[in-house]
Length: 557
Figure 1: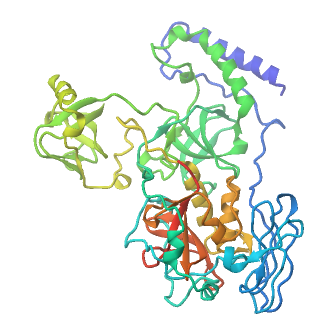
Figure 2: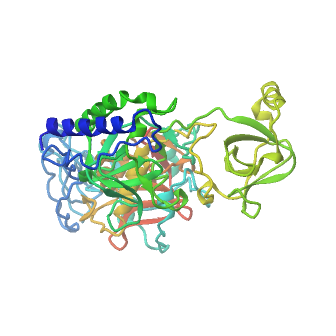
Figure 3: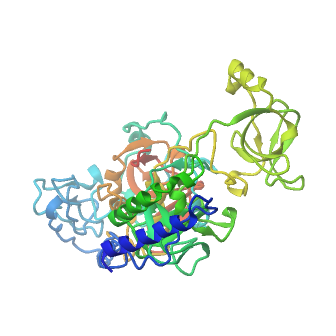
């Protein structure tokens, strides 16, 4: 059906609705559009973009014999060198000038030129650890992560059971580090490790993003996961309005509509310019009868929104990105606790206590609930308390202004926010959500999706096989970050920080005898994800029982 004809029919439908209702109230404030046709389902739809992951054939295991010459660097002059002895000359891995040197193999000479088009003739392995991947070895470093190191936590990593590594099972290139005679102390002394960076944290609070409109091209479900056999968390009628929160670049869009939040297929949405044109048309129609709307009600209230099918606390997708189009930071009423008491998970005396208050502790009232209960926030504790247990007099705010908010205590956490089903009873808060670069979570999710895939020395394929530095190089490259090929060079990119300060997505480096031989990605909760060895493949494992020299932060927040 032609777009012009569709809009004409929709206009007639909208006008008919307004004429029928006249000046009477409109309980649902919703325009029925069930007969609006199949707008947006023609060839003008946007097809999902292909996943950018490179898929080369697996690289062969290194031959202990003579190494081959490096391949041509191509447009960026960064070819990969052939196999060779770590004690001999390998190609210089030096950005735009030359390619990566040969992988440590036998005792014969490796490639003398890492890049056939480069200007350099190569440097020794001792200088930069040049090799197809001279980074893949593990040793005992100098700055071990403390037991139970958490840094910034990741909910994704918490769901994966780490692999237990045998004490004698070192990463693939460990033996190469034994050929060096330096010390880790000397290596660390030559670095610039920054210890005063602000902490990166991701709290439970939401942040507000701009509205990106979309409409449902048909009646459809909203899913908890990015697959159609996952739990349905909401349904929406044809031509209903949604807001795109994140394009997952795999054919799925993370959306919110009404109280529902989850994933829909890109092909089921009217998006982009078509959605904007449709929105403009419908708003023009709605403006003709805005007098029928109560004061303060948006014209968007005329549109269908999704109906949630499960409570928010049973929807794993609800806080997937912790972003929303709603305004979440509010100026809430301040109150003080009259006595020692508890904040509860539900508006019931029988509900479990999620936080404890002392007399005089500061509480903010977020919403009035039922039967004298209030939904409140105190520090990072959110839940319900009876109004009678709080001093809500007019003098409270004056007292806070005079003495300062920091002079008052707040609730002590009993149940962690992620275990507290009341935490998202309202998305409103007196504080803005912690600033957090979502690329961290995305790159980590992609890394964890590769767990179980093979390790291949010199490889860079996330599916067919990669070594440790090839693994992180490919991952970061998918999100626009260009890293050198080997771990030693990668350890010099970004901001060097103590291992204990690592946040999910940061890189952690291991060294022995003053030589960086291995790299892992920090996953949070004291875990790493890494291409470990031919025996183990790509795994998650614990960091607390291993040592590392430093971490690097490449993703800025």
